Length: 322
Ligand code: ADP
Image 1: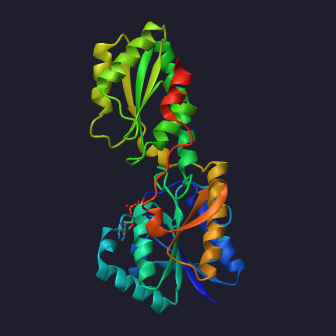
Image 2 (image 1 turned 135 degrees about the vertical axis):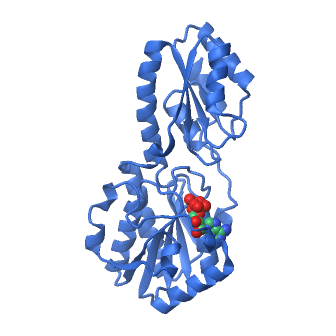
Image 3 (image 1 turned 45 degrees about the horizontal axis):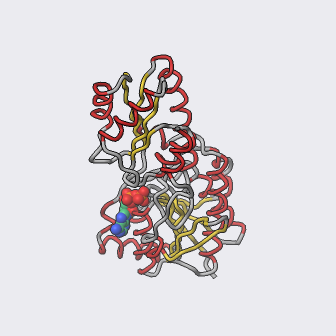
């Protein structure tokens, strides 16, 4: 029977991580197991920044954004020698297993540590929704709510001035934040790696919207798209359509804020489930929800899986915009 587990958050932070930390700490302590919080991701292990956690440490944290454990990028962990020293350090401390909350980089680290004899379970924590073994990642819903708030505000002023607003949202090569937001928030045009449009196609669409009498429009663009720079795109729209165009890059505002009720629920359920699996001696798994069920997939499979939005983006935009 396991006596001590560790928990860390790594990679980009996401609202809902704290709810997962709380669930892990409570589930472990209620099962008679000690929990150690590792500060600043994998780096905190070798630096010995590890604290024994009590239930009082996690009281009320489910409503707080960010992660109380902190997170840093620690590329040195890709080095096999650093990982071996890290596994040895955990063994020396008697920490037999870890819950690792983060994105696909964090999952890689968790998989490698499991190979070195430290069972790890990954919880998907990223606003980008770019982990395919789960329908939704922690933070995605909150980020969409933040985008909704921003788009509502931008649309007010865009309507008054008869403008086209080009908005860049996050997503890290995954178009979900842009596509889900475009459909849910009624943007006219969306451009993502999975839903590419050329500048000419965008201009043609906008001219046809203008011809139909539409006074304002919103174009959502995913970040990190070499083909599409929102500043240049807004300049082209300004030049080649009757809309005055403005651009906004929402940036890290999308990563912060109090988690939505859904992200708190997801954090609570995945945190509890991951801990139960660890206490049963399982490791090398990534937990998530799929088709309304808790699921646990081997991390190496989770990293290769592919998922599509539950709607057809072209069909939805056609239905909603014409
Ligand atoms: P995310 O987990 O959000 O994808 P990163 O890609 O920055 O964020 O990964 C988070 C951390 O996971 C890295 O700073 C590093 O410590 C660890 N990591 C990333 N890739 C690997 C890898 N290939 N092998 C081992 N550890 C990795």
